[in-house]
Length: 180
Image (cartoon, rainbow, N blue to C red; front, side, top):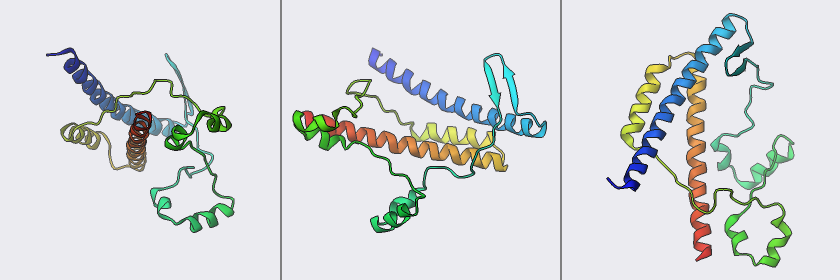
């Protein structure tokens, strides 16, 4: 077996094991949360640090559901005018790469360089591995409210990671094309 094949297998095996460990971590977190609530304890010192049970300041997440993206610009503007939304800015990498050096100067001091260079590895688990993870997930978590919340957060995290990786791949491809 070639070294590249060994490294690829090792990467996929580690990614799979990490996903399983994440599920185990979430289950332990769920169990500990329940125990701390039942025992009215909000702090535990451990060999590696301190665990604190804290209540959120708000029951709402600052991240909006995907359905928000389906609103037209006028509806978004109206909601923004209420003061309930914040606007965040991101660099249009494709357009920035197309600018000449003089035009880039205006924004250059605010642009962050990628620290890992111009390449990255993206890994997606195959259907068999995902099915095994889903099976472990279903066997670990009960149907409690905390479990549902954790599983929803896990699913949201997966979706955000998938979207982020897709966006990064798109940006990387656009960046590579603009360098050609």
